[in-house]
Length: 141
Image (cartoon, rainbow, N blue to C red; front, side, top):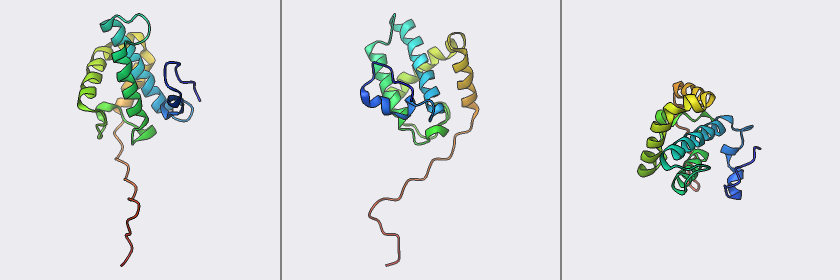
């Protein structure tokens, strides 16, 4: 398991998105998100090292959403996703960050940028079926 960044709570080390060996797609998506947040925060908020509190809180929210994605390792990029798991305010804030940082990714993180573009070309998978509710009896009466 890859170590979680030091500024994350201990429970975050157990998240799927931090285990690049078992969940490479989710770990790559988190790395792309983190790079975009760092570009945006450094250029727009003047953060010399790390993220400002507002960006750090939004990245923690995005990490939780990514970790709980119903698609798991077959997750499409958010633009192609059929499930909108972000609240409206956070979705707009992340959209602003991606819109700013996306074009700059090609010069600052070209491998992540190309991989993200290729991931964006994959079709979104069908929504997984919900498990049956407990306590219901579908048998004959």
